[in-house]
Image 1 (cartoon, rainbow, N blue to C red):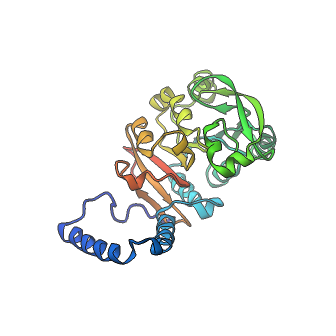
Image 2: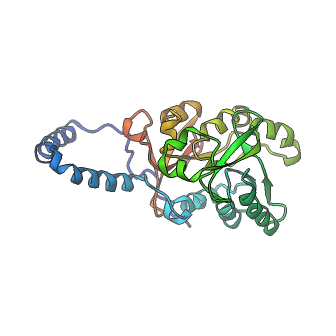
Length: 291
């Protein structure tokens, strides 16, 4: 049996008066010593380490990010239908297919990355549907900006070009078809025989909110058990907080994935420290699901 650590202690619980007093005293002592220009390098180093431990700057392969552990948790629910939006070459879809018996619908509009996704579909006949379209808030043709031919940084969003490494990379452009999940499932749900979605995973380099706004009917009707989004610096330039995502996903409880299989931790999106614009993965769990 897989042991997934979830919320060993609820971090959203209020601190006791004694603990608050202790924090206040320690804070004054720390500030007296370190709140000066010459010591900011220490504060910055400690902050980066603390953020890493909290699950930020959490990138790498699926084992490093904790996503592989989350998929093990998902497997307990015997998923039958998962959606991978922004699948790129299909690494996440591949892990889903190997770890569960689910069917996966994977969307990827970047032509070169889609070739790899089609090859993966051939390895799992009847279980992976590869769709060469982007997903957004409306049905349209949009410019997709990218660097390398199969880039994982490709995005429909021009705002995120203010991030230096993205703006330097995404110099190429291709026009691709974009569909809403509402439209897709309106046309395909009968053929799919879909009554419920087990997982909706979205990794669209700053376009996550648009995907969700184009899926309001789908989420209402097919009630995904889990909705996973990537949350990064991109959302700062899109002016979207984690709080705004939570308001959009009423009836879901947000958790943050911790690295290296450490588990998931419940987050209070009303707190500023839960709205940090650094690379992280959040899973919104349908409120009736017990994990």
